[in-house]
Image 1 (cartoon, rainbow, N blue to C red):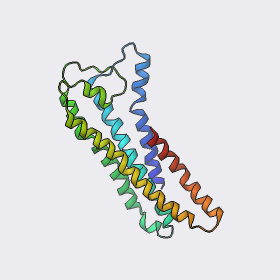
Image 2: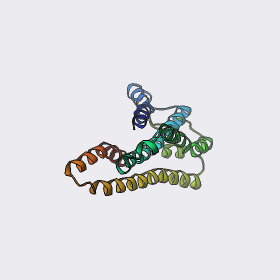
Image 3: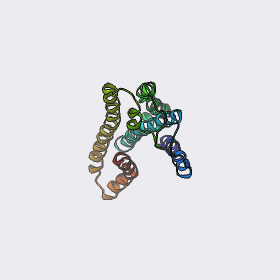
Image 4: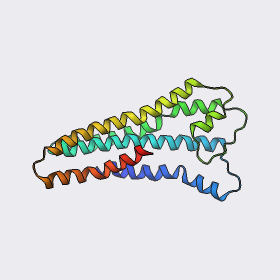
Length: 195
């Protein structure tokens, strides 16, 4: 659990760092623009770190499921090796998820290469393209939807199993302890999905 939490904390620092310095520079500057290459670099890191966060929330839900539903087998299942595989998979999948759409969008722009924003989103970037790309828009929105729904459904499944196990605990204090273990993760998932 601590390996996942340490990586999640590092991820949050990087996630905030991908946008806040640009936003602060934009507030203090007279020119409210971002360069084309800076925009794509920010776009890639912002969406990659966001994707990684989705995968980490799923991995943390799996860890919580094992800790509550399989407490006696937890040390044999959640080994350091499995934890490292989960962490590595989250980082790799997160940074590969939007790589192709971002590289395709970067090749399609023409005309003005100045974006009047401090945060690069697909909307302003697709507005710079000379031709409409419905297939690219569909691919980008499908990847975004899958990125949110697959981990969300996995997390909901893990929590359903955790809830079932917790409701079987005979003592009220045991149920409270199990729910308090879930509370912080559930709050983070709720805040992230509400964005």
